[in-house]
Each structure stands twice: as structure tokens, then as C-alpha cells.
Length: 210
Image (cartoon, rainbow, N blue to C red):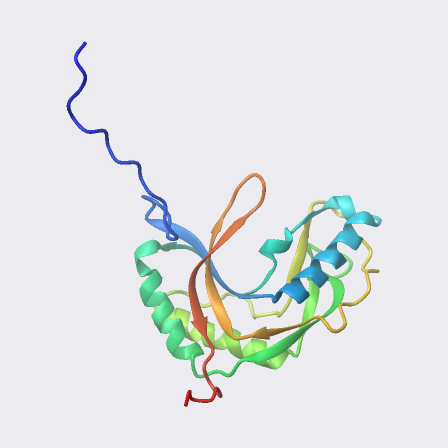
């Protein structure tokens, strides 16, 4: 049989915004610095090895972040305009430093759905979350239905039992917030995979270059 002279169709290439899909699952968040990430991962490891630790699906250390605004499924073509609108609100803010605090069950210790670490101070992080939301709304998306609560998720409780919050507090685990990141979230059997789509810097209060 003669070979087909027609060229083979090109393989679809998957970029940061996905392949042929018209929507993607997205959220805005703050990344941790490496020292804070290692500290949070060690706290999670200690909790995992303690009573109730096997009843929690722990977040991989590379996926740890502080969520500012969850968007859900959005049209991929709207990512550039979304980033621009959020950038206009976020850029005037000044960078700030956060510290990881103690561990607790969220939303309540008695009936936790997730195991979290608190972050402080809350005021600058809450201000950043408000700025992100203003940009999200300006881009034509819905505001968050629930008020923002600053926390770092370590794991999701699978049953009624949660591990004891007996891990030592992460005192001194500081990290600087100089940007917010728009992430794509892909749900996989091995756990969620996050890919940075846009990085939006906080530029207020910075000295001008000479």
C-alpha cells in the first residue's frame, strides 16, 4: 500500500494557559519564601506522624500558598484583561513581610475541614486581598461570597478526626510579599497541580532606580 502523502497533523502544544480548552480553573494567591515553605512542610510532617495524621490529605510542600481570591472556571481568553485590572489595583501597594503562626483546625477546632497555619500581621494581607477583589470585579467577575480569612492550608481533613495541633509554632518563619500570582489549578489523582500564569508586583513605596 502506498504511503499517505499528506503530512501528519501537528501535535497540540500545551502552554501555560492550557491546550485546546476554552476555560481553566484559576485563583490568586501569595507564594511562600523557601525558609517559610520548609518550616510549614516540617510542621505538616510532624502532624502527619502524630495521632490522626493519616486522616488528613496533606498539601505537597511545593504547592503551599496563601489564597487571596478563588475564581473557579474562567475563559482562558480573559486572563490578560483580568491580570491588567488586578495589576492596576495591586501595583500601588507596598511590599510587606508576613510570619507563620500557630496551627489550628478551620473553620473550627471541633469540626475542622482543613488544618491551617495562621499568618500575621493580617492587615496588609487583607488589604492585598481587597485590592485583588477590586480588580477581579473590575474585570467583570463575581466578588467572593465569603469574607477573606488569612490562612495557609496544610491539609484537608478526610474524616471526622483531625490531628492534634501540637506541632511547635513556626516562630521566625518570615517571608516577604512582593507580588500576587494568578495560578491555574489542575485537579489530578495525585493532587492538585498549580501553574503560575501571571505575576503582578506590588510597587508602592519602592525607590526609583537612579
